[in-house]
Amino acid sequence: MHRFAVIADPHYFDIFPGYAMAGPSVGERKGASIHTLRDSAASTRLFNEGYFALPAALDLCVHHQIRHVVIAGDLTDDGQVSAMDGAIAVLDDYEARHGLRCFLTPGNHDAYGMSGRDITRRLLNDDGSYTVVGSASPDMARLEQPYLHEPRQRCQAYPALLEQWGRFGLARRPTDLHWETPFGPDDTVETRFCTMTAPDGKTRQRQLDLSYLVEPEPGLWLLSIDANIFVPRDGRPDNSQADAFEDSTAAGWSALIRHKPFLVQWMRDVARRADAMGKTLICFSHYPMVDPLDGTEALEAALLGQTMSVRRTPSSAVSNALCATGIHTHFSGHMHIYDRAAVTAGGNTLTNYAMPSLIAFPAIIGLVSARGKQVEIGFERLEFDSYRDLLPAYQAELDHLGASSPMLAATSYGDYLFRHIGEQVKTRLMIDEWPPELSAYVEGHDVQGLLALLVPHGADIPGLLREASLAALPLSQVMTDTHALRMGSEMAFDFIPAPRLEAYRALAAFVVGTPRPPAGIAAQMHDLISMLERFAKAGHSIQWCDACRQAERA
Image (cartoon, rainbow, N blue to C red; front, side):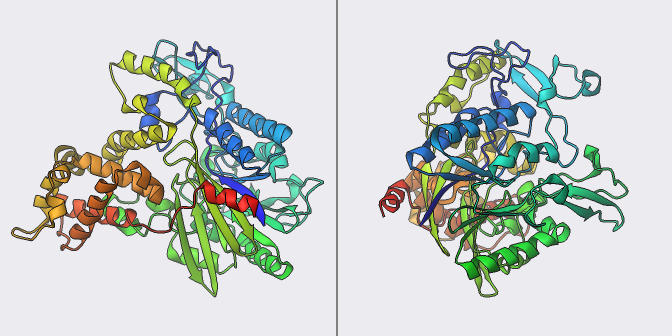
Protein backbone atom coordinates (compact mmCIF):
# COMPACT_ATOMS: atom_id res chain seq x y z
CA MET A 1 0.00 0.00 0.00
CA HIS A 2 1.42 3.39 -1.01
CA ARG A 3 1.03 6.19 1.51
CA PHE A 4 1.39 9.89 0.85
CA ALA A 5 -0.13 13.20 1.91
CA VAL A 6 -1.89 15.86 -0.14
CA ILE A 7 -2.12 19.55 0.70
CA ALA A 8 -3.15 22.48 -1.45
CA ASP A 9 -2.70 26.23 -1.63
CA PRO A 10 -0.33 26.95 1.28
CA HIS A 11 0.10 30.49 -0.13
CA TYR A 12 3.28 30.88 1.88
CA PHE A 13 4.37 34.47 2.53
CA ASP A 14 7.65 35.10 4.35
CA ILE A 15 6.70 37.60 7.05
CA PHE A 16 10.39 38.26 7.79
CA PRO A 17 11.81 39.01 4.34
CA GLY A 18 14.02 41.86 5.52
CA TYR A 19 12.08 44.64 3.83
CA ALA A 20 13.21 48.15 4.80
CA MET A 21 10.14 49.10 6.82
CA ALA A 22 9.20 49.53 10.48
CA GLY A 23 6.95 46.53 10.76
CA PRO A 24 5.33 45.16 13.93
CA SER A 25 6.64 42.45 16.22
CA VAL A 26 5.33 38.94 15.68
CA GLY A 27 6.05 36.66 18.58
CA GLU A 28 9.52 37.47 19.83
CA ARG A 29 10.75 38.90 16.52
CA LYS A 30 10.63 42.53 15.52
CA GLY A 31 10.25 44.06 12.09
CA ALA A 32 7.73 41.74 10.45
CA SER A 33 6.21 42.48 7.05
CA ILE A 34 2.57 41.44 7.25
CA HIS A 35 -0.54 42.24 5.26
CA THR A 36 -3.42 44.15 6.79
CA LEU A 37 -6.24 42.22 8.41
CA ARG A 38 -8.66 44.37 6.43
CA ASP A 39 -7.26 42.98 3.17
CA SER A 40 -7.43 39.40 4.46
CA ALA A 41 -11.03 39.86 5.59
CA ALA A 42 -12.10 40.74 2.05
CA SER A 43 -10.10 37.95 0.42
CA THR A 44 -10.80 34.28 -0.23
CA ARG A 45 -7.83 33.48 2.02
CA LEU A 46 -5.67 34.90 4.76
CA PHE A 47 -2.40 36.47 3.67
CA ASN A 48 0.06 36.02 6.55
CA GLU A 49 -0.94 32.79 8.24
CA GLY A 50 0.69 30.59 5.58
CA TYR A 51 4.02 31.38 7.26
CA PHE A 52 2.84 29.17 10.15
CA ALA A 53 0.40 26.88 8.32
CA LEU A 54 2.86 25.27 5.90
CA PRO A 55 5.27 24.06 8.63
CA ALA A 56 2.29 22.95 10.74
CA ALA A 57 0.96 20.84 7.84
CA LEU A 58 4.38 19.30 7.25
CA ASP A 59 4.65 18.55 10.98
CA LEU A 60 1.44 16.52 10.66
CA CYS A 61 2.95 14.61 7.76
CA VAL A 62 6.02 13.81 9.85
CA HIS A 63 3.78 12.73 12.73
CA HIS A 64 2.01 10.26 10.43
CA GLN A 65 5.37 8.96 9.13
CA ILE A 66 4.63 10.17 5.60
CA ARG A 67 7.57 10.27 3.17
CA HIS A 68 5.95 11.88 0.12
CA VAL A 69 3.79 15.02 0.01
CA VAL A 70 1.86 16.24 -3.01
CA ILE A 71 1.24 20.01 -3.03
CA ALA A 72 -1.52 20.87 -5.51
CA GLY A 73 -0.37 24.34 -6.52
CA ASP A 74 -0.12 27.85 -5.09
CA LEU A 75 2.83 27.10 -2.86
CA THR A 76 3.34 30.84 -2.48
CA ASP A 77 1.30 33.94 -1.76
CA ASP A 78 1.70 35.41 -5.24
CA GLY A 79 4.97 34.12 -6.66
CA GLN A 80 7.03 36.87 -5.03
CA VAL A 81 10.77 36.20 -4.97
CA SER A 82 10.87 36.59 -1.18
CA ALA A 83 7.87 34.29 -0.67
CA MET A 84 9.31 31.67 -3.03
CA ASP A 85 12.72 31.73 -1.33
CA GLY A 86 11.06 31.32 2.06
CA ALA A 87 8.77 28.48 0.99
CA ILE A 88 11.58 26.54 -0.67
CA ALA A 89 13.70 26.94 2.47
CA VAL A 90 10.86 25.34 4.48
CA LEU A 91 10.57 22.39 2.08
CA ASP A 92 14.34 21.88 2.02
CA ASP A 93 14.47 21.98 5.80
CA TYR A 94 11.80 19.28 6.21
CA GLU A 95 13.51 17.05 3.70
CA ALA A 96 16.89 17.50 5.40
CA ARG A 97 15.55 16.87 8.91
CA HIS A 98 12.76 14.37 8.26
CA GLY A 99 13.28 12.87 4.79
CA LEU A 100 10.03 14.45 3.61
CA ARG A 101 9.98 14.87 -0.16
CA CYS A 102 7.46 17.28 -1.69
CA PHE A 103 6.13 17.14 -5.25
CA LEU A 104 4.97 20.46 -6.69
CA THR A 105 2.69 21.52 -9.51
CA PRO A 106 2.32 25.13 -10.68
CA GLY A 107 -0.61 27.20 -9.47
CA ASN A 108 -1.75 30.55 -10.78
CA HIS A 109 -0.09 32.24 -7.78
CA ASP A 110 3.35 30.68 -8.29
CA ALA A 111 4.54 32.30 -11.52
CA TYR A 112 3.13 34.51 -14.26
CA GLY A 113 3.79 33.12 -17.72
CA MET A 114 7.08 33.90 -19.42
CA SER A 115 7.13 37.50 -18.20
CA GLY A 116 6.47 37.68 -14.48
CA ARG A 117 4.60 40.69 -13.11
CA ASP A 118 4.75 43.36 -10.45
CA ILE A 119 3.02 42.80 -7.11
CA THR A 120 1.90 45.59 -4.79
CA ARG A 121 0.54 45.03 -1.27
CA ARG A 122 -0.36 46.98 1.86
CA LEU A 123 1.91 45.92 4.73
CA LEU A 124 1.46 47.00 8.33
CA ASN A 125 3.67 49.43 10.21
CA ASP A 126 4.21 48.93 13.93
CA ASP A 127 1.66 51.66 14.79
CA GLY A 128 -1.22 49.99 12.90
CA SER A 129 -0.94 52.13 9.78
CA TYR A 130 0.36 50.64 6.56
CA THR A 131 2.93 51.18 3.84
CA VAL A 132 2.35 50.25 0.21
CA VAL A 133 5.14 47.87 -0.81
CA GLY A 134 5.64 46.87 -4.42
CA SER A 135 8.10 45.72 -7.03
CA ALA A 136 7.18 48.40 -9.56
CA SER A 137 9.55 51.35 -9.74
CA PRO A 138 8.26 54.38 -7.80
CA ASP A 139 7.60 56.39 -10.96
CA MET A 140 5.43 53.55 -12.28
CA ALA A 141 3.54 52.95 -9.02
CA ARG A 142 1.72 56.32 -9.11
CA LEU A 143 0.48 56.01 -5.56
CA GLU A 144 -0.24 58.81 -3.12
CA GLN A 145 0.41 56.71 -0.02
CA PRO A 146 3.92 56.09 1.35
CA TYR A 147 5.53 53.64 -1.07
CA LEU A 148 8.42 51.25 -0.55
CA HIS A 149 10.07 49.90 -3.67
CA GLU A 150 11.02 46.28 -3.03
CA PRO A 151 12.16 44.27 -6.08
CA ARG A 152 11.65 40.97 -4.24
CA GLN A 153 7.90 41.60 -4.29
CA ARG A 154 7.89 40.76 -8.01
CA CYS A 155 6.15 37.58 -9.13
CA GLN A 156 8.65 35.55 -11.11
CA ALA A 157 8.27 33.94 -14.54
CA TYR A 158 8.16 30.28 -15.55
CA PRO A 159 11.90 29.84 -16.33
CA ALA A 160 12.77 30.79 -12.73
CA LEU A 161 10.13 28.40 -11.43
CA LEU A 162 11.63 25.47 -13.30
CA GLU A 163 15.08 26.33 -11.99
CA GLN A 164 13.92 26.60 -8.36
CA TRP A 165 11.49 23.68 -8.33
CA GLY A 166 13.60 21.10 -10.14
CA ARG A 167 14.29 19.03 -7.03
CA PHE A 168 10.57 18.93 -6.16
CA GLY A 169 9.60 16.66 -9.03
CA LEU A 170 10.03 18.99 -12.00
CA ALA A 171 13.43 17.50 -12.83
CA ARG A 172 14.85 14.01 -12.52
CA ARG A 173 16.56 12.82 -9.34
CA PRO A 174 19.09 9.98 -9.49
CA THR A 175 16.93 7.99 -7.04
CA ASP A 176 13.77 8.21 -9.18
CA LEU A 177 12.81 4.85 -10.64
CA HIS A 178 11.13 6.53 -13.60
CA TRP A 179 10.77 10.11 -14.75
CA GLU A 180 9.45 11.72 -17.94
CA THR A 181 7.64 14.73 -19.37
CA PRO A 182 5.11 14.93 -22.21
CA PHE A 183 8.12 15.52 -24.46
CA GLY A 184 10.19 12.52 -23.37
CA PRO A 185 12.82 11.58 -20.76
CA ASP A 186 14.96 14.73 -21.13
CA ASP A 187 14.59 17.22 -18.27
CA THR A 188 16.51 20.11 -19.83
CA VAL A 189 14.63 23.36 -20.25
CA GLU A 190 15.09 23.44 -24.03
CA THR A 191 12.96 20.30 -24.46
CA ARG A 192 9.94 21.53 -22.51
CA PHE A 193 8.43 24.23 -24.68
CA CYS A 194 5.07 24.11 -26.43
CA THR A 195 3.41 26.55 -28.83
CA MET A 196 0.04 28.14 -28.10
CA THR A 197 -2.10 30.06 -30.56
CA ALA A 198 -4.21 33.17 -29.95
CA PRO A 199 -7.93 33.29 -30.82
CA ASP A 200 -7.05 35.01 -34.13
CA GLY A 201 -5.44 31.74 -35.26
CA LYS A 202 -2.27 33.59 -36.26
CA THR A 203 -0.45 34.85 -33.19
CA ARG A 204 1.73 32.20 -31.57
CA GLN A 205 3.79 32.13 -28.40
CA ARG A 206 6.26 29.61 -26.98
CA GLN A 207 5.47 28.63 -23.40
CA LEU A 208 7.18 26.30 -20.96
CA ASP A 209 5.14 23.31 -19.84
CA LEU A 210 6.16 21.94 -16.44
CA SER A 211 4.20 18.65 -16.42
CA TYR A 212 6.01 15.48 -15.32
CA LEU A 213 5.56 11.84 -14.34
CA VAL A 214 7.70 10.42 -11.54
CA GLU A 215 8.02 7.05 -9.80
CA PRO A 216 9.58 7.88 -6.40
CA GLU A 217 9.01 4.39 -4.97
CA PRO A 218 8.33 1.05 -6.64
CA GLY A 219 4.85 1.00 -8.16
CA LEU A 220 3.75 4.58 -7.37
CA TRP A 221 3.34 6.93 -10.33
CA LEU A 222 2.70 10.60 -9.54
CA LEU A 223 1.46 12.52 -12.58
CA SER A 224 1.67 16.30 -12.29
CA ILE A 225 -0.14 18.28 -14.97
CA ASP A 226 0.76 21.91 -15.57
CA ALA A 227 -2.76 23.26 -16.14
CA ASN A 228 -1.77 26.93 -16.08
CA ILE A 229 -2.90 28.22 -19.48
CA PHE A 230 -1.69 31.68 -20.51
CA VAL A 231 -3.66 32.22 -23.73
CA PRO A 232 -1.88 34.56 -26.18
CA ARG A 233 -3.61 37.80 -27.10
CA ASP A 234 -4.23 38.58 -30.74
CA GLY A 235 -1.29 40.29 -32.42
CA ARG A 236 1.01 39.95 -29.39
CA PRO A 237 3.67 37.31 -30.15
CA ASP A 238 6.19 38.61 -27.56
CA ASN A 239 5.16 36.98 -24.29
CA SER A 240 8.01 38.56 -22.36
CA GLN A 241 5.45 41.33 -21.77
CA ALA A 242 2.85 40.67 -19.05
CA ASP A 243 -0.01 42.11 -21.11
CA ALA A 244 0.66 39.84 -24.12
CA PHE A 245 -1.40 36.96 -22.73
CA GLU A 246 -4.43 36.27 -20.56
CA ASP A 247 -4.19 35.51 -16.85
CA SER A 248 -4.45 31.78 -16.17
CA THR A 249 -6.70 32.23 -13.12
CA ALA A 250 -10.04 31.30 -14.71
CA ALA A 251 -8.74 29.18 -17.62
CA GLY A 252 -8.18 25.71 -16.16
CA TRP A 253 -8.95 22.44 -17.91
CA SER A 254 -11.37 23.91 -20.44
CA ALA A 255 -8.54 26.01 -21.86
CA LEU A 256 -6.03 23.18 -21.51
CA ILE A 257 -8.04 20.91 -23.80
CA ARG A 258 -8.07 23.66 -26.45
CA HIS A 259 -4.52 24.96 -26.10
CA LYS A 260 -2.51 21.96 -24.80
CA PRO A 261 -4.23 18.94 -26.37
CA PHE A 262 -0.91 17.06 -26.31
CA LEU A 263 -1.29 16.82 -22.52
CA VAL A 264 -4.61 14.98 -22.84
CA GLN A 265 -2.99 12.53 -25.26
CA TRP A 266 -0.07 12.03 -22.88
CA MET A 267 -2.43 11.45 -19.94
CA ARG A 268 -4.21 8.76 -21.94
CA ASP A 269 -0.89 7.10 -22.75
CA VAL A 270 0.32 7.26 -19.14
CA ALA A 271 -2.95 5.76 -17.87
CA ARG A 272 -2.71 2.93 -20.42
CA ARG A 273 0.88 2.14 -19.42
CA ALA A 274 0.06 2.31 -15.71
CA ASP A 275 -2.70 -0.26 -16.16
CA ALA A 276 -0.50 -2.53 -18.24
CA MET A 277 2.39 -2.37 -15.77
CA GLY A 278 0.31 -2.57 -12.59
CA LYS A 279 1.30 0.88 -11.35
CA THR A 280 -0.71 2.95 -8.88
CA LEU A 281 -1.37 6.17 -10.80
CA ILE A 282 -2.24 9.37 -8.94
CA CYS A 283 -2.78 12.55 -10.95
CA PHE A 284 -2.68 16.07 -9.53
CA SER A 285 -2.85 19.62 -10.83
CA HIS A 286 -3.96 22.98 -9.51
CA TYR A 287 -7.37 23.03 -11.20
CA PRO A 288 -10.39 20.73 -10.60
CA MET A 289 -11.29 18.18 -13.28
CA VAL A 290 -14.88 17.79 -12.01
CA ASP A 291 -17.36 20.38 -10.71
CA PRO A 292 -16.64 20.81 -6.97
CA LEU A 293 -19.72 22.98 -6.31
CA ASP A 294 -22.47 20.37 -6.23
CA GLY A 295 -23.99 21.33 -9.56
CA THR A 296 -24.81 24.92 -8.53
CA GLU A 297 -22.97 26.56 -11.42
CA ALA A 298 -26.17 27.41 -13.35
CA LEU A 299 -27.85 28.81 -10.23
CA GLU A 300 -24.84 30.98 -9.42
CA ALA A 301 -24.57 32.21 -13.01
CA ALA A 302 -28.27 33.11 -13.08
CA LEU A 303 -27.99 34.92 -9.76
CA LEU A 304 -24.61 36.62 -9.99
CA GLY A 305 -23.41 36.28 -13.59
CA GLN A 306 -20.02 34.96 -14.67
CA THR A 307 -18.36 34.92 -11.26
CA MET A 308 -14.84 33.65 -10.78
CA SER A 309 -16.25 30.38 -9.45
CA VAL A 310 -18.50 29.92 -12.47
CA ARG A 311 -15.61 30.54 -14.84
CA ARG A 312 -13.35 28.15 -12.91
CA THR A 313 -15.82 25.24 -12.90
CA PRO A 314 -15.21 22.64 -15.64
CA SER A 315 -18.20 21.73 -17.80
CA SER A 316 -19.54 18.18 -17.91
CA ALA A 317 -18.14 17.85 -21.45
CA VAL A 318 -14.65 18.75 -20.21
CA SER A 319 -14.92 16.34 -17.27
CA ASN A 320 -16.10 13.55 -19.56
CA ALA A 321 -13.18 14.15 -21.93
CA LEU A 322 -10.73 13.95 -19.03
CA CYS A 323 -12.42 10.84 -17.68
CA ALA A 324 -11.99 9.20 -21.08
CA THR A 325 -8.19 9.41 -20.67
CA GLY A 326 -8.38 6.61 -18.10
CA ILE A 327 -7.23 8.77 -15.19
CA HIS A 328 -9.21 7.64 -12.15
CA THR A 329 -7.91 9.74 -9.23
CA HIS A 330 -7.09 13.44 -9.34
CA PHE A 331 -6.28 15.93 -6.58
CA SER A 332 -6.79 19.66 -7.15
CA GLY A 333 -6.65 22.97 -5.30
CA HIS A 334 -7.29 26.50 -6.60
CA MET A 335 -10.88 27.08 -5.43
CA HIS A 336 -10.12 26.69 -1.71
CA ILE A 337 -12.96 24.16 -1.48
CA TYR A 338 -13.20 20.69 -0.02
CA ASP A 339 -15.31 18.39 -2.17
CA ARG A 340 -15.28 14.92 -3.66
CA ALA A 341 -16.97 14.58 -7.05
CA ALA A 342 -16.92 11.86 -9.67
CA VAL A 343 -17.89 11.36 -13.30
CA THR A 344 -18.13 8.15 -15.33
CA ALA A 345 -17.46 8.00 -19.07
CA GLY A 346 -16.14 5.37 -21.46
CA GLY A 347 -16.11 2.68 -18.81
CA ASN A 348 -13.90 4.72 -16.46
CA THR A 349 -14.78 6.62 -13.29
CA LEU A 350 -12.77 9.76 -12.54
CA THR A 351 -12.86 11.01 -8.94
CA ASN A 352 -11.68 14.54 -8.22
CA TYR A 353 -10.69 15.43 -4.68
CA ALA A 354 -10.80 19.21 -4.36
CA MET A 355 -8.52 20.16 -1.47
CA PRO A 356 -8.95 23.42 0.45
CA SER A 357 -6.26 25.96 1.22
CA LEU A 358 -4.23 25.75 4.41
CA ILE A 359 -5.21 29.37 5.10
CA ALA A 360 -8.93 29.29 4.39
CA PHE A 361 -11.84 27.34 5.85
CA PRO A 362 -11.64 24.37 6.21
CA ALA A 363 -7.89 23.82 6.54
CA ILE A 364 -7.08 20.10 6.29
CA ILE A 365 -4.46 17.74 4.95
CA GLY A 366 -5.30 14.51 3.14
CA LEU A 367 -3.63 11.25 4.16
CA VAL A 368 -3.86 8.79 1.29
CA SER A 369 -3.40 5.03 1.08
CA ALA A 370 -3.52 3.65 -2.46
CA ARG A 371 -2.89 0.45 -4.35
CA GLY A 372 -3.88 0.11 -7.99
CA LYS A 373 -7.25 1.83 -8.37
CA GLN A 374 -8.10 1.40 -4.70
CA VAL A 375 -7.72 4.78 -3.00
CA GLU A 376 -8.58 5.55 0.62
CA ILE A 377 -8.24 9.06 1.98
CA GLY A 378 -8.46 10.25 5.55
CA PHE A 379 -8.16 13.78 6.83
CA GLU A 380 -6.48 15.66 9.61
CA ARG A 381 -7.74 19.09 10.56
CA LEU A 382 -4.95 21.66 10.72
CA GLU A 383 -4.67 23.19 14.18
CA PHE A 384 -1.83 25.27 15.58
CA ASP A 385 -1.53 28.18 18.00
CA SER A 386 1.27 30.21 16.43
CA TYR A 387 -1.22 32.19 14.30
CA ARG A 388 -2.02 34.03 17.54
CA ASP A 389 1.37 35.75 17.30
CA LEU A 390 -0.18 37.89 14.55
CA LEU A 391 -3.12 39.08 16.65
CA PRO A 392 -1.40 41.98 18.50
CA ALA A 393 -0.46 43.54 15.16
CA TYR A 394 -4.03 43.08 13.92
CA GLN A 395 -5.35 44.67 17.10
CA ALA A 396 -3.07 47.67 16.55
CA GLU A 397 -4.47 47.99 13.03
CA LEU A 398 -8.05 47.81 14.31
CA ASP A 399 -7.29 50.41 17.00
CA HIS A 400 -5.80 52.67 14.33
CA LEU A 401 -8.99 52.32 12.28
CA GLY A 402 -11.38 52.49 15.23
CA ALA A 403 -12.75 49.10 14.19
CA SER A 404 -13.17 45.57 15.55
CA SER A 405 -13.15 42.03 14.20
CA PRO A 406 -14.75 38.83 15.53
CA MET A 407 -11.78 36.88 14.19
CA LEU A 408 -9.61 37.97 17.11
CA ALA A 409 -11.94 36.21 19.58
CA ALA A 410 -11.46 32.80 17.93
CA THR A 411 -10.81 29.84 20.23
CA SER A 412 -8.83 27.76 17.71
CA TYR A 413 -7.35 28.01 14.22
CA GLY A 414 -10.39 26.22 12.80
CA ASP A 415 -12.71 28.69 14.53
CA TYR A 416 -10.52 31.54 13.29
CA LEU A 417 -10.99 30.40 9.68
CA PHE A 418 -14.73 29.86 10.21
CA ARG A 419 -15.04 33.44 11.49
CA HIS A 420 -13.16 34.55 8.38
CA ILE A 421 -16.06 33.10 6.34
CA GLY A 422 -18.37 35.61 8.02
CA GLU A 423 -15.98 38.44 7.20
CA GLN A 424 -15.85 37.31 3.56
CA VAL A 425 -19.63 37.40 3.31
CA LYS A 426 -19.79 40.92 4.76
CA THR A 427 -16.81 42.52 3.05
CA ARG A 428 -16.51 40.60 -0.23
CA LEU A 429 -19.65 38.79 -1.33
CA MET A 430 -22.23 41.34 -0.19
CA ILE A 431 -20.19 44.30 -1.42
CA ASP A 432 -18.37 43.11 -4.53
CA GLU A 433 -20.28 40.12 -5.90
CA TRP A 434 -23.96 40.37 -4.98
CA PRO A 435 -26.46 42.82 -6.49
CA PRO A 436 -26.92 45.76 -4.07
CA GLU A 437 -30.62 45.07 -3.58
CA LEU A 438 -29.89 41.46 -2.59
CA SER A 439 -27.23 42.50 -0.08
CA ALA A 440 -29.59 45.07 1.43
CA TYR A 441 -32.36 42.49 1.78
CA VAL A 442 -30.11 39.92 3.46
CA GLU A 443 -28.73 42.56 5.81
CA GLY A 444 -32.20 43.67 6.91
CA HIS A 445 -34.23 40.47 7.24
CA ASP A 446 -34.49 37.19 9.12
CA VAL A 447 -35.82 33.72 8.29
CA GLN A 448 -39.36 34.74 9.23
CA GLY A 449 -39.21 37.57 6.71
CA LEU A 450 -37.81 35.21 4.08
CA LEU A 451 -40.71 32.80 4.54
CA ALA A 452 -43.17 35.67 4.24
CA LEU A 453 -41.47 36.62 0.97
CA LEU A 454 -41.34 33.16 -0.59
CA VAL A 455 -44.24 31.16 0.81
CA PRO A 456 -47.71 31.60 -0.71
CA HIS A 457 -50.26 33.08 1.69
CA GLY A 458 -52.05 30.35 3.61
CA ALA A 459 -49.48 27.64 2.85
CA ASP A 460 -48.77 25.12 5.59
CA ILE A 461 -45.31 25.87 7.01
CA PRO A 462 -43.60 22.95 8.82
CA GLY A 463 -43.45 23.31 12.58
CA LEU A 464 -39.65 23.31 12.69
CA LEU A 465 -39.59 26.46 10.59
CA ARG A 466 -41.97 28.22 12.99
CA GLU A 467 -39.65 27.80 15.98
CA ALA A 468 -38.62 31.16 17.36
CA SER A 469 -34.89 30.42 17.32
CA LEU A 470 -34.94 29.82 13.58
CA ALA A 471 -37.54 32.43 12.67
CA ALA A 472 -35.44 35.17 14.29
CA LEU A 473 -32.16 33.99 12.76
CA PRO A 474 -30.69 36.83 10.65
CA LEU A 475 -30.31 36.02 6.98
CA SER A 476 -26.72 37.26 7.20
CA GLN A 477 -26.01 34.28 9.50
CA VAL A 478 -27.82 31.93 7.12
CA MET A 479 -25.65 33.18 4.26
CA THR A 480 -22.47 32.84 6.34
CA ASP A 481 -23.33 29.22 7.10
CA THR A 482 -24.29 28.65 3.46
CA HIS A 483 -20.87 29.91 2.36
CA ALA A 484 -19.16 27.68 4.94
CA LEU A 485 -21.06 24.67 3.57
CA ARG A 486 -20.16 25.72 0.03
CA MET A 487 -16.46 25.85 0.88
CA GLY A 488 -16.26 22.92 3.27
CA SER A 489 -19.07 20.49 2.38
CA GLU A 490 -19.24 17.94 5.21
CA MET A 491 -16.19 19.54 6.84
CA ALA A 492 -18.48 22.43 7.89
CA PHE A 493 -20.88 20.21 9.83
CA ASP A 494 -18.75 20.42 12.99
CA PHE A 495 -18.86 24.23 12.94
CA ILE A 496 -22.62 24.72 12.53
CA PRO A 497 -24.82 23.65 15.48
CA ALA A 498 -26.63 20.42 14.61
CA PRO A 499 -30.14 21.81 15.31
CA ARG A 500 -29.44 24.75 13.03
CA LEU A 501 -28.13 22.48 10.29
CA GLU A 502 -31.27 20.34 10.57
CA ALA A 503 -33.38 23.49 10.34
CA TYR A 504 -31.46 24.62 7.24
CA ARG A 505 -32.21 21.33 5.54
CA ALA A 506 -35.89 21.64 6.39
CA LEU A 507 -35.95 25.26 5.22
CA ALA A 508 -34.18 24.45 1.98
CA ALA A 509 -36.38 21.44 1.22
CA PHE A 510 -39.50 23.51 1.85
CA VAL A 511 -38.39 26.49 -0.26
CA VAL A 512 -37.16 24.33 -3.14
CA GLY A 513 -40.58 22.67 -3.13
CA THR A 514 -42.29 26.00 -3.81
CA PRO A 515 -42.48 27.57 -7.28
CA ARG A 516 -39.59 29.89 -8.12
CA PRO A 517 -40.81 33.49 -8.34
CA PRO A 518 -40.35 34.99 -11.81
CA ALA A 519 -38.03 37.85 -10.84
CA GLY A 520 -36.80 40.24 -8.18
CA ILE A 521 -35.56 39.64 -4.65
CA ALA A 522 -37.87 36.67 -4.22
CA ALA A 523 -36.31 34.89 -7.20
CA GLN A 524 -32.79 35.71 -5.98
CA MET A 525 -33.46 34.38 -2.49
CA HIS A 526 -35.09 31.27 -3.94
CA ASP A 527 -31.88 30.64 -5.90
CA LEU A 528 -29.70 31.15 -2.82
CA ILE A 529 -31.76 28.75 -0.74
CA SER A 530 -31.69 26.25 -3.60
CA MET A 531 -27.90 26.41 -3.43
CA LEU A 532 -28.04 25.92 0.35
CA GLU A 533 -30.16 22.80 -0.24
CA ARG A 534 -27.37 21.23 -2.30
CA PHE A 535 -24.51 22.31 -0.06
CA ALA A 536 -26.18 21.03 3.13
CA LYS A 537 -26.77 17.49 1.89
CA ALA A 538 -24.88 14.77 3.69
CA GLY A 539 -22.81 13.28 0.88
CA HIS A 540 -19.93 10.93 1.52
CA SER A 541 -18.68 10.18 5.02
CA ILE A 542 -15.52 11.84 6.27
CA GLN A 543 -12.73 9.49 7.33
CA TRP A 544 -10.71 11.23 10.01
CA CYS A 545 -7.17 10.46 11.05
CA ASP A 546 -7.98 7.59 13.44
CA ALA A 547 -8.82 5.50 10.38
CA CYS A 548 -5.55 6.63 8.84
CA ARG A 549 -3.67 5.36 11.87
CA GLN A 550 -5.36 1.99 11.40
CA ALA A 551 -4.08 1.98 7.81
CA GLU A 552 -0.59 2.71 9.11
CA ARG A 553 -0.71 -0.41 11.28
CA ALA A 554 -2.07 -2.60 8.45
